[in-house]
Image 1 (cartoon, rainbow, N blue to C red):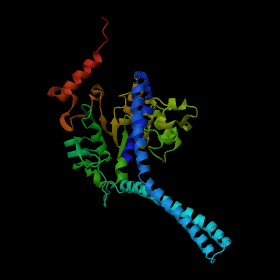
Image 2: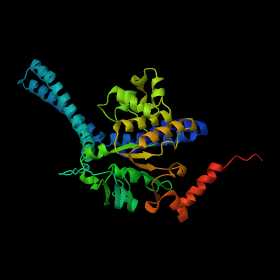
Image 3: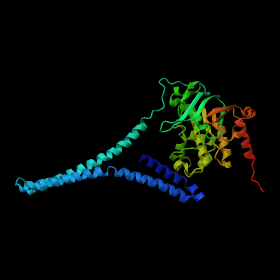
Image 4: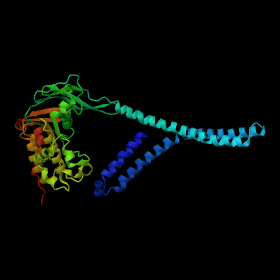
Length: 396
């Protein structure tokens, strides 16, 4: 039942969110039939769940009704024997009927409690998941150098099976410099960055910031050190001002506007109906991708953390917005330790240090020139991207 409900909800959400793609490819019939099959499976699972207690519930109701009939017959027998008057029997039956109805409701409530108990058990299992540990005596970092020491990490599924994402990663990301992380899709780039912010804990090895293992720092201390700007920007319900102040809740309006100006976001915000007090649609749907990205950069500027974790901000942005985003990123990275996930190698060729990941392993590291000289994975990726940039549509 739970699996059928989860599959139905996922399929329905996928259908609604993907309806534009479905229209473009004319696949309404195929996709709709798939959704119908999943909903029919859910319907069958719900019916099976409802039918299972039905005989017991019917037997319980029948026993109560037969009890009331037996009580009435006993009363008639007592009247025939002369030990009970009809008026007293009528009063007794009238008073007994609500009691029997309450007993029936009690049986139904008991059944509902069994279902509620199952749901409560799942909630308790969720709440029982251990939180990230907090040190008893938290340490403070000294500097912003980031060090990975033989780090391994794996995702764990519901059956407890682990799939390795990172294997024996050892590297140093220098303070006050830019470290780029590159590699094919699925190489583990995002996971590596998430471990710096301790969104997950490593399974073995250690990640340290300023000479201190991130597990020995308090959550607040670590989050004050780190700001994140990723490609997928999440905007919350509320005004533009509220979304920007997520970077620092106590920021004044003037400080927010100054951060937006540095992020090249002030002009388009001012053009909104109520400027900074404009209430955004769900997920910021009324804004373009470039506008959402600039709001995310303004958040990071407002936070003013010494370490910046940055996904390629222009990977899915149109060229007209790319220049503004690049200027905003350049402002954001000044004077900070920057770790950037790079998809376009030409955008990070001037990085102080480049890490090349492949299938969860660190296969190469060095500067752009050093990596090209090694003639390895980085050089092959560079040549492929250069060929793609020079490609032109044939006229023949």
